[in-house]
Length: 95
Image (cartoon, rainbow, N blue to C red):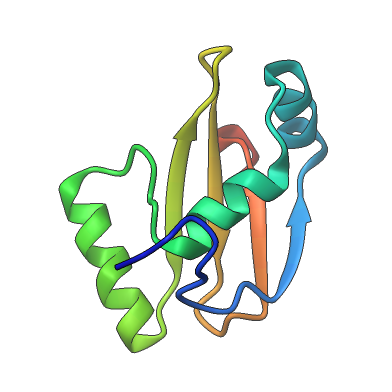
């Protein structure tokens, strides 16, 4: 079972785009809270296909992708690279 603080994979260096940081600040959400959810296997608003892809990625070492809705209505993505060297918090339009 996954708990909110149990990381299922390495996140590497954690970075965020300026736009994502601004959106998170407006929403009163910390980047760390989303990265923790992401690394614990809470994929947020990903559809069933993306959820399964993430489960496979955790096992096989592929890219992991999560989507989180903010109270402001904006969406934030969290992406961990396949080599686990880095995790980025960004807005969809930053991609």
